[in-house]
Length: 265
Ligand SMILES: C[S@@+](CC[C@H](N)C(=O)[O-])C[C@H]1O[C@@H](n2cnc3c(N)ncnc32)[C@H](O)[C@@H]1O
Image 1 (cartoon, rainbow, N blue to C red):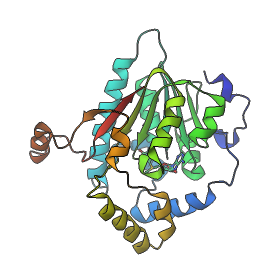
Image 2 (cartoon, rainbow, N blue to C red):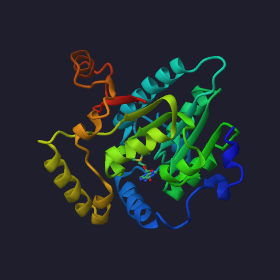
Image 3 (cartoon, helix red, strand yellow):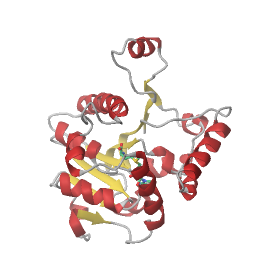
């Protein structure tokens, strides 16, 4: 699998489709923030994700993430057949925990984790060993387009869509990476309405300012839901549905506050 990747350089187990230092400024600011948020994990903890110890300060967030990953993986399992290999691309895979979960659950599939943040990608490749059906790739979707147009069945953005400006242009680019009947999944990220958008933008600017990394605000994009709804995605999980509100109130599930969307291409 991934024959088209074999000719590309592969330092530290990461396939390079973009040049080395294009993304250094973003990565430096991004990792500074993640460090302060306690979201950079050591190798031992990364191996346990999405189930950190219950005493971990971010355990409640991971409970929600584990649940939404489970929902997604169940859905992907339903898409696989005994004969067909599902080609999956996770854009913005970070430390690769979800890429790994998908590869482990869908053993007959081929999965690529793509990111522009080298330290976390290197950790992903170190912990979740690349294999014939698993690759970690350094670069952006637009770089992949040159190598693998109309190649993937599934594209996933988990807690990542907010790092992409101009969502409609990105969606068109992602669509071009998909085979017919492909799907784009967006999960674990907020969308805003015209009314709530200005407040969200202000809040993120103030947040990064407070953390002493104001430049990250330029890379963090609160999205207006209408820019996504124009593609007519399907809502797969709605935290505000009555059943989910009840489950959450009873502490029984539906912990994720974020919608899960699937766009069929
Ligand atoms: C909050 S993390 C999410 C990581 C992982 N998907 C998860 O669920 O934990 C967002 C990731 O998007 C990556 N990212 C930001 N801009 C990107 C781009 N243009 N192309 C690929 N990845 C990008 C960041 O480097 C970061 O690793």
